Every structure is written in C-alpha cells, then in structure tokens.
Image 1 (cartoon, one colour):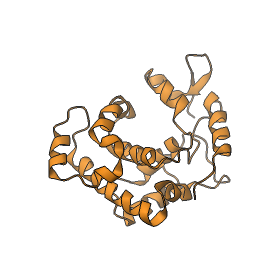
Image 2 (tube, helix red, strand yellow):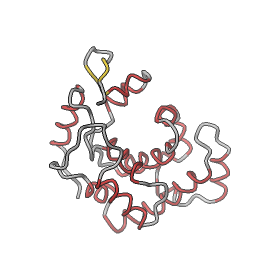
Image 3 (cartoon, rainbow, N blue to C red):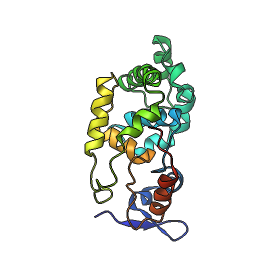
Image 4 (cartoon, rainbow, N blue to C red):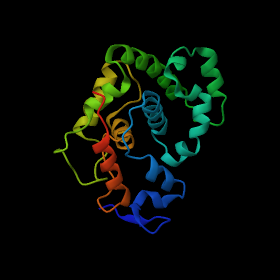
Length: 202
C-alpha cells in the first residue's frame, strides 16, 4: 500500500510528495480540490495529455511556460490556431514540443467550444462523471475507474484526442472528481470538506 511522508510542517502527506519539494504546495493547495472553472479544467486536461509518457514534475515545472505559450489555455483563442501557431509552439523550448500532442490540444480546444455551446459549460459536462460516493477503492491503488473509462469514451466520441482512461483518471484525481488522497494524509479531510461545500454544476 502507498505510504505517507512527513511534510514541511511535520504532518503526513501522500508519499508521492516526497519525490521533489515542489510537489508539496501542489498537493496541499490544488490536487483533489473541486474545480468548476472551465479554463482550469481545460488546462488540466491539456497538461495531462502532455504528461502522457512523462513525469508530472516535468509538466509542473513547465506549467507557466505552457500557459504563456497557449494564451492561458483560453480554448476560444486556441480553437483558432493554425499552422503558424503550430510552428511557433514547435519552436518553443519552454514546453513539450510534441507535434501530435500540440495538434491534439488545438483540436480539443475546438471541441471544448462545441461542448460549451451544447452543455452550457465544460464543468457541467465533466462533473456528470463524478463516481458515486458508494463506489470506493483504496486510495492510489488504481489508475482507471469505470467513470474515467466512461469519460474517456464520451470525449473520444466527441472528437477529443489524447484522452485515454488513465489520462481521464489523473484529471479526475486532480480536479476533485475523485478524492485519492491517502486516508492518513492531512489534506484528505480538507479535500473532503471542500467537496461537501462544492455545488456540483450539473
């Protein structure tokens, strides 16, 4: 079973925080807290797509570069990107220069605009895939779940790219649809309380 590590304040955190110091603030302030903002949801799904095959540390350290390169992940602007923008991004050493992933998130931006028009918001769509509270598993023991498989399938059916079940599950963990903090992690109770206060946008 995954183990906790002692954080800077001496309280236990999820063990993956112990890999590098910059993981602690991300873990304590972002990972697992529910998100309703469409741009943040889109950004995270893009970053998870870029992470495929890489470490989250690599992406986290480049996150501000990604934001600058992709107009703050404003999917309305990104949907209009053409060959010139792809060439610019392929020349940007501050991000992951993977043509397939770059082109995928541009395609996904157009799909996000369509989803906003048909669903009212990205948040309204994504939060429909929150697993039932009764559907539980030991934290950090799975990399997919039925809900992430369903989310991946739904996104692919709408033309989204680089959104497999594992990517979808990591997105759900990070954006609060799944509380995957360890039971003994000091942040788990904070995330649970935040979810209890959160009004689902569905």
